[in-house]
Image (tube, rainbow, N blue to C red):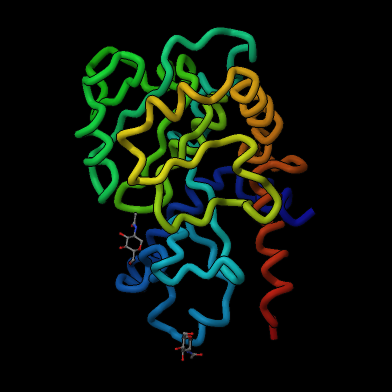
Length: 254
Ligand SMILES: *[C@@H]1O[C@H](CO)[C@@H](O)[C@H](O)[C@H]1NC(C)=O
Ligand SMILES: *[C@@H]1O[C@H](CO)[C@@H](O)[C@H](O)[C@H]1NC(C)=O
């Protein structure tokens, strides 16, 4: 299989990808910027399937033709070790919601202004105080807040899926990865930017059985976001290939 072949011949796929991106961005410094990628060549821009993390539909990302790539933060080329096996579904999660991260882009300042240090149920931080562990917070929270930053995408969505912490997506114009085949509303919650002030009310009004259903569905879709080396059936690598293949039906490839 072609994907396994790639992983076998490139054992360190992450390094390969980084060198590729580095080279590419040096060669085309003005074009390698999310939705603007390949704009330098209009023909390529319109006629190729672009696979992008920053899938901002109001910035030229075309969901019919382009592929939204989940953003995954691989430190040392691996998934975070403490997210490999989340706790049992029945284990209790003391925090209602959690966010920690850089305050950039248009949405995060609104979230931080409203909720930072306001309510112990909503653990909203810019950077976590020293000694506190980011992933432990995710594993101990029912909901993980995923507001867009500079870009619509953020690795915390995938990290929330890994930790079975229901993602709360706060974003404008973000085309979610694999949304042709995954019903995001079955395992995440979308909150409008204008509803940020209502976050606690919205999350506490989700009935317990509905929350459990979201969590069970998260467990069911988790494997579609997992990176295996070599790739395994239905994992993130195959999901990406499948998204590309689907777009091929919409785009006449000469
Ligand atoms: C690409 O698409 C844009 C927007 O639809 C259009 O204005 C432009 O003429 C197209 N360019 C090419 C080279 O097809
Ligand atoms: C998405 O694109 C719009 C239009 O260019 C822009 O105003 C907005 O800031 C972008 N969103 C993010 C999070 O980059």
